[in-house]
Amino acid sequence: METKRKNDIQPLTDHPDLVEYCSLCEATFQPRSVSVIGDNGRTQLLHTACTRCGSSVIVLLVMNDLGLRSVGFLTDLTGEDVFRFKGMERLSSDDVLDVHRFLSDEG
Image 1 (cartoon, rainbow, N blue to C red):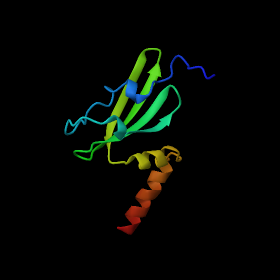
Image 2: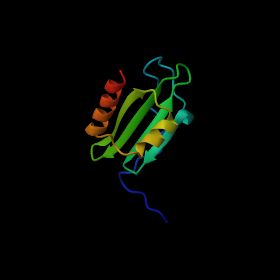
Image 3: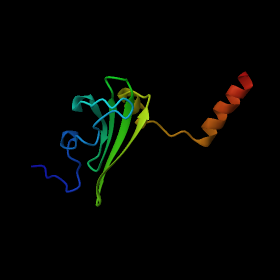
Image 4: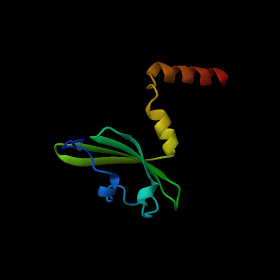
C-alpha cells in the first residue's frame, strides 16, 4: 500500500482556483485544458491554453511548509514545447555569444 507524503500536491482538480481564468480575455479555463508537464510530489509544472483567445500559460505549483504557492506566466509555447524543452541543457552565455557572432557576421 502506497502512503501519501504530507506535502504532496493534490491533483489540480482539488485546486481549481489556481488556474481559473485567462489573464488576457478572462475566459474560464476548463480543467481538461490543463496539462501536467512535470510532477515530483512537491512541485508541479502545468501548461494550459485558452480556447477563446489562444494564449498559453505555464504555471509552477510549489508545496512547502507555508502552503501551496503558484507562479504563472504567459507564453507562446505549446504544452509539447514545454515538455520537450524542460529536459534540455541550459544555454550558456557562450552559446548566446556564438549566436550573436553568427548573426553579426551574416549581416
